Length: 461
Image (tube, rainbow, N blue to C red; front, side, top):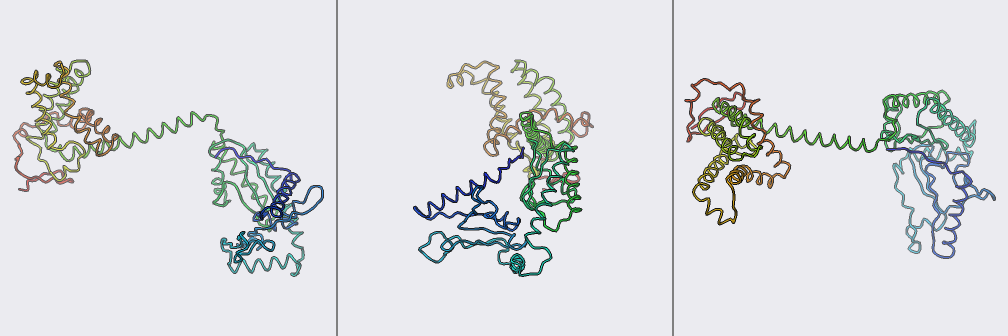
């Protein structure tokens, strides 16, 4: 919410406009088709000595009152109790007469038929007509109320100005609105600071409120003090700062959004790594193999691949993965059910990748010329090794992207590429293990179950 300042139109100018509008409606009704001049007095009626806006906005020169065709009244007709009604000239509220098309008399408002509102309305209207003995007439009370609230608004605005707060109060009778002179995006927090001072505005606006006629000068002074105190606290907290750095704010929000999205995907990626380790990296030899294969991948395979030595890099990559996957193949007792929790390569897909990698090596040595002739490509040794290495991960990446979307696919790709780094962190306690673990082979035909709490693996059958 930004700056909100409304310039008030002079009463005579607004009254003249209303009379011109009423004249146009009367002309259409007399010579063309019926057009109702409707006056909505929900926020005006019974709040001033004139009682209605059509009496208040008289013609500036002739003093003639407005003559609305339909008048809408709200809680003012019941002295603030919930009640609404619509009154009109004859011929405008004929629901059941088919000759009249303007059928607007069916009114359903909040608690429109509540007996408390009806009783209050009867008492108020009787007092208004002088049928009840009152020490001070209703018109005199309304005049006193208007003067008292006008003085309150003037004094409060002066206090706002003295405190150099970008706030002002506009008032008509007992209705008030808050104007925000600052273009801050956080002006709408002012009602929350008022709540901290014990002032509760309506939940339908950021600065509109009404006061009842029984508010005393002491009440209004206390109210003004809290309005100023709330504004000063909000000023101290920096929420009235003008919005001069819009681009900086937008870039900041974009940065925070990007950071939060990346953090979510980072947390998901680390969770995938955690599940992968807990599910299929429990045997000491498997952890030892992952640690040392990661060391040689970072020392040799990655540097050679990124420095234009694809053959050396792919050979190092193949040898380190033979060590890496041997821990799974010969030692890791895999729980097939819990393995389903893993995201990405499962044991079976890893074996498939190894088989096709071996076939690719054999095919390069035996059928290189036939493959190049069939594809119409003249691949060098480095290019062939690079394609072969890519096809160990690209098919699975395409499958994940197809099933879960490109962001999940990119996340999996990053996880695969950074596995050697995180494996060093996770498995460094196993850089040296007892030789007896190398004799602890698994039975390939056996079924194993993993206890997630104790990490113990037992053979079921």
